[in-house]
Amino acid sequence: MQLNYINKPHFDNGAIEKISEVLKAHGIKNPLICTDPGLSSIGMTDKLRSLLTNEVSPTFYEETPANPTEKAVNDALELYRSNNCDGVVGFGGGSSMDLGKAVALMANHEGSVVDYSINEGGLGKISKTMPMIAIPTTSGTGSEVSVGSVIIMDDGRKLILASEHLIPDAAICDPELTLGLPPTLTAGAGMDALTHCIEAILSPVNDPPAEAVGLDGVEKIIRNESLIRACENGEDKEARWNMMMASTEGAMAFAKGLGAVHSMSHAAGANQDLRLHHGTLNGVILPTILRFNAGHVGDKYSRISRAMGKDESTDLAEEIEKLNERIGLPSGLAEMGITENMIPGLVAHSMTDPSNMTTPRLPSQEEWEKLFLEAM
Image (cartoon, rainbow, N blue to C red; front, side, top):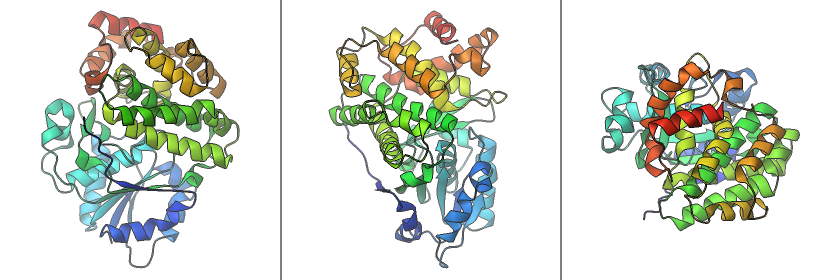
């Protein structure tokens, strides 16, 4: 058993004002700031720029796609090198943070991004990366404290890079950055955080502290109704604070692994035509896997129900379906554009996903097919 939370999140309303102080502490004077067009269009990057002291000379890469790609990593890396950058800032949702991690990796590693994926034996190839700071502007992925980065490779596979060296050197978690986030994005990101907490709890890996962190995340999201409140009123500061904390806790908890929900969502999320939101996929798929895992996780469903503030006999799958409906998530994968003729490819992708290593019940090929059909 290994407990390994080694970076330092600066967590509070207004924490973004520490950006120059944090960069200086990590020796970064010329950061490449990886963000996305949406944040640029609403002035968030201008706000960040205004907080930087004159000692900092930033370069902005503002083209992070909704699901980061190997091509985007290489484009950002070219910008990093041509501007003599000495560190990376991931500013945005999980996509910008994951892209930033991959750039920090490739800035001092040889070869291609795909070489460092778990599927290609990359786990042992990753050594110390360039300094990297993560600043989340959504409450979902928890990438600011996680060991992972998920990238769609040039060959179409959505693969995981994972190493303790990919944990950002520092994180700035400012819940006020999420105020006013649209309800659809709030809902999808929030279900990402909840899925992380639940799948981590259900993982068979023995790590009681990580499990306790996951249960606390579930409590913040469900018992406190923070996700519902944040969706209904984007300016609810208490709900936003709880959701960002739960998001960070979800990633801390999944130090003990994830499961089949993520295997399926990674497969569906690899589709470059549909460009589906990862957290929304997790929320839509979660009830299907909760039904599949029932009876294979001991008393963990009862403990999750208690954390939710529900009776121990609560049907968790039904509870999640009701939550999805209330916050406006799609009713199934078909509504998101997935069709039955895609299932064979989705199954093939799911069967090779590293999340299967810690799923409490590993599906057979036939069971994967039935799970996708049920999730439709």
